[in-house]
Image (tube, rainbow, N blue to C red; front, side, top):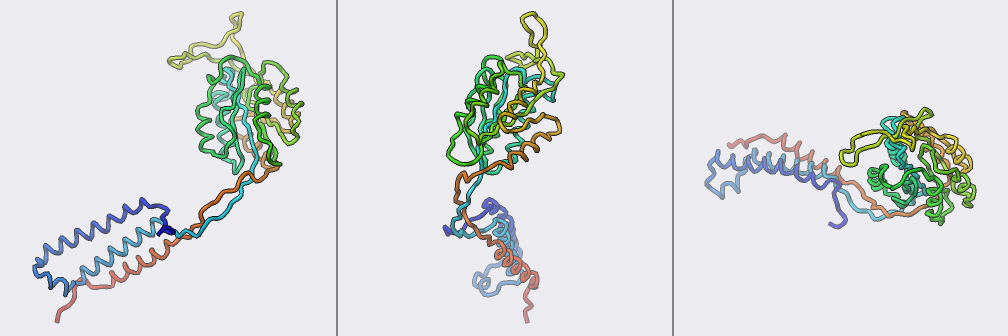
Length: 329
């Protein structure tokens, strides 16, 4: 029995329906016919009872078929090919600007969600950054886990203001485990308003020739004001002001992101409501070199549902051909 298992074991509960119906039928029959002679019951079984027994057994076999019976045939080794991808996520306060709906940080998370949905075998990790950067999620091929980590990313994760793309790239570069010949990918999602412009120098100094840097600009040239929210109610109460008391307008700095991608042998994309940047990015990284990341053992199972279904139909058909009562001469 260790070699036998069911794909949907809880479907056994459906078997209670024909069994319960059969029990009710037997009780009703005994009451109706007033069977008193036990020996007579064992000798003469009305066709109606036999018919219902066959129907019940047939339905039970169909329920077993519905449960998806399978025979274990052994294990098979499946190799997964992939590469490592670190996603660098700008979590500075400027990512709250609503020049792309609903706001920049929400659009970033939507883009990453689209990337995760299309990964097969690649490992992905998250590095949020503003003034500083840290590895929020190390590289993993558990995409459900990645969605959970993505869910909690917001602009309150890192204290301090500003956008330090350089520190995030340095951290990503040092976090890769260079044990395969596969390409490595950094994806930067930001509005490009960095504290200084040394991120390009950082990319130039990276010695790993298999590292590709892709960038996605999130925001617009027109830009927008940076909302300020109440910590308790989470309601917008104002907009950020500079030292002179003027409202601060945050705009997309695409030039920095374009140069980063160019130096890093990658491509720059502009975030849009249509989501075209997701498919374009996936197409580009899809052509990169991958290596065998790991080998998994999976069960080889052979379905047996057809035998139970066939037997159930056969019993059901036989029951329908029987008369309800035996004619006594």
